[in-house]
Length: 391
Image (cartoon, rainbow, N blue to C red; front, side, top):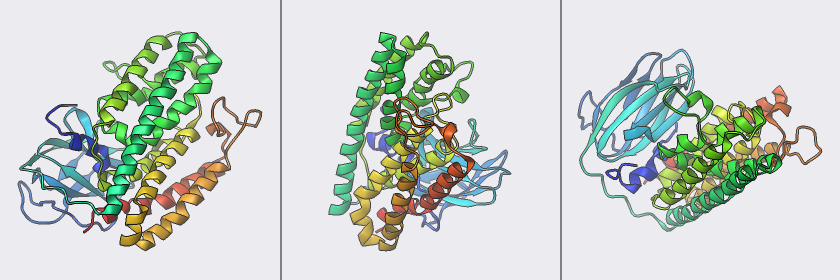
């Protein structure tokens, strides 16, 4: 991470994205160049264009109003140097509009539109100038939520290091059964804090890249490179160096996470991002394509989102009791449905080390039911950041 970017910026990373309907613009400045008028920054995300209504803005919180004019589902990112994610909004259907709130300190950024949600996308440069406005003092409920979440993330990062070490030790021992038994636990802890990890643009690919992201100049590495060798090629040959690299990178992640300054906006956007991840790659069975433990990752994302909601719930109850009522209903419904797919050794679809059945054991109706529940919670979850950042 470049030192010029503060730890608050790093923390904000991916998580400062907000996806809500009808959210106000915050301190965004509109216009074709540097602007001073209030209002969202509009983004026209087309098949071959990514038109942003202004390319120079003042430091602070901004709302991007994204319209998908492409012929397929799209996603839009705001990247800092090194493709560090400052904010993202995914799964925008054709002709639909979504909003994205991002805290942007002074610096240079890129707005990337990715039709089909693949590749580097079409990009527009964005320059942010001036001093960042001072953060408002949090009330007791919000401060308690931030403090609790910081402890949770650090605890999960420590567990990720420990469970990854168990996994890589088994590789060193040449014990294939132990490798498979250890893999799901390590993945669970990563998925619970996935948006935080993704905010470190250099580390996340080294830990969690999929083979689609490997190019001639980018080596396939991390969890999924080992997963491919173990589950698809049924060998531990070639895993030793990958395991050493993985240990190093999760330890780096644990170190940098300790310096993250969380905010209620970061938390709320992270929760929404986790559910977007479920919809994008877990419920579709794309994430764990060799091991088929996609439901472990699914559960990890839901765990992380639910922790955020639980921590913020006292503040949300004061500000928007109707939203709390909805989420109090939606989270148990999703978790209960996921629980119906648990499996123990000897059960049909059981995978060593996983408490859930193989993704391949799910019927089309099972997948559809999970997708429906994810969709049902996604929209209200996306309102959290707007509520906690409102005055």
